[in-house]
Amino acid sequence: MKIFHRISVTLEPAIKNAFSKAGMPLEGGFVSFDIEETDERWPDVEKIVHRHQLLDIITTKFSEEEISNSEYLAVEPTWHNGYPQPDGDFGYLEKTYDLKEYCCKCGQGKVQAAPFRLKKPPNWGRRSVFQLNWVFDEYFVRTELWENAFRPHGIGCRPVVLHKTGEAISSVVQLEIEKKFDVGIPKDAPREVCPNCRRDKILPITRGFLPRPLVDVKQAMFKSSQYFGSGGSAFRKVFVSSSLFNELRLRDVKGVDFSPCLPSG
Ligand SMILES: [Zn+2]
Image (spheres, protein in one colour):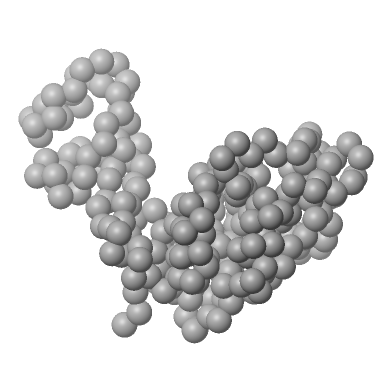
């Protein structure tokens, strides 16, 4: 795997000078650049980033071998298609979830109780999977993809309705991902404890392998029992088995990407 850092910086003279000394001459007012951790300039650049507390967005690019050997893979959305309805004042929360255990400060504890409502039917183009903005632990797929790829793997579905009429949209279903398993979070993983409900959640993991489930999972698709996110956003991470991943890859499914979980042993 390769670890990339996207550094964003406002070039004050002292910072510009420091980067120049580190072998990275930068020009302009506000700049962003990518650097890989194996780059010989990274150790110096990293010090500058820490010293000046610069914005550093980390991404991991996995090798083909790491991906194809992985027993479980985390699903990563590449298409966020619209907002759950009604979107004013987050009205979708009341319409879609049982909120008895919900904390509005950290976003944890909602339980889906009704179909999601869309403003309009999806404009798929070449894609066949999406997530809604704000809802980072549910996936929506073309109905025929569910029938042909997900249903044979034992995955159910829920209807998705048009907000205006309340009627089901025939071209899309929501995947029903009921099973939740603990995944192995390192003890030192950064987490936030909610000041309101005292439940904690793990900050999104973007460096290296994703955590793997702590038990052998037979389901083709499942969620972490732990919550991820920061601020008011809380979501469970969604995972697939290698056999479902291979099926989706063979079909060249667009709208999602996959990150491998830590190998066993
Ligand atoms: Zn809370």
